[in-house]
Amino acid sequence: MRRVFRASVGLAVTALALTTTGPVAAAPVTPPQTVVDVEFLGQAVIPTGAMFGGTEIGGLSSITYDAGRGVYHTLSDDQGNRPTGDPVRYYTVAVDASDGSLDSGDVTFVDVTSLDDDGGVPFAPGGLDPEGFTLGREGFFFMSSEGNTLANPIIDPFIKRYNRNGHVTAALPIPEHFIPNGVDRGVRFNLAFESLNPTPDGRTLVTAGEGALVQDGPPSTFANGSFARILTYDLRQRTPLHEYVYEVGPWAEPSGIFGVNGIVEVLPIDDAGTMLVMERSFSVGGTLGGGTGNSVVINEVSTVEASDVLAVDALYEAGAPVAFTPVTQRQVFAFDDLGIPIDNIEGMTFGPPLADGRRLLIIVSDNNFSPVQFTQFVALAIDLAPAG
Image (cartoon, rainbow, N blue to C red):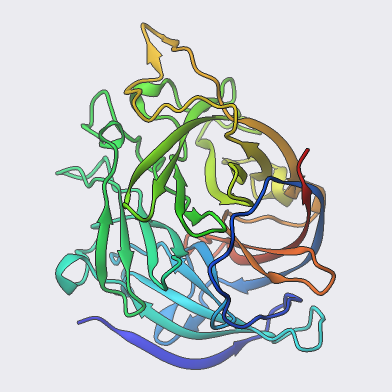
């Protein structure tokens, strides 16, 4: 049975200073923008084990702002197979910024809603890996799953549209080159659709592979980077539109146990192909990120001069890259510069405009339900200006 929990429980955390707005009309086309400054506004930390509505708060892998309601919705990447028996779900979070300060107790979890599989039935335990979550223009949510290439049979990645009650209303077609066969093509394990956000005009949905497809070359290591595909959809037709290549960097730190680097979020800042890409490197035993081993940066990218590789099945042939032009990219923010512990950051969204006209960026981390990690909200102020 689908479960919807409603309650109002405040958490004693460091609050985020932001403002709220009422319902907004469909946005006009946004001309090219660029980031000119980024300022850290504060953070909120929720310890592992915190509960809401009978579920454990954690695994927050994505976040989206609901301007009509003045709240945020954040997806848990719980696959429904933990001992707690918690369902696949998203939380609704309110932030009280009436005093305009970063005060304790201003972050409140107000709702938790379970998400069904096709046909209105609960997902089979472990039947997906929920990662991306965003609010669509017409009040629908979109959720992405990385799938599981280690399952038998393989679980394919997907992007589905949901109504507010957590029921599937549509599925977007996934280009064939993303579909894994477990041998020589498709997404790699845990390196699929981590990101999901629309363009400001609401007409295009953007996601990305976290790292290279099997046929697109090697995954990132401390010695080399990899190629990740940014995929866009025409939401009016619900069909793939374009694909561009993003060059993922090598791991920030070496590890003899485990390391990874890849795209964890893509957030368009205009309707002209400019996006913020959050790239996260994690190395077991690393000292970056305040000792957590996480090194996270935000890059501004542009697709304007990049090759459209939607029809390109493989970015590697005979052991070498094929000819293409990747997106341009430049770093605009590094979390290591904050000098605070940075957890497993994965999701980001624009909130309402700040009083001074800057854009509020809210970022959330996935604590993996680990007692040695924590759920972290970070607030940044982004100063945008016309490009050119």
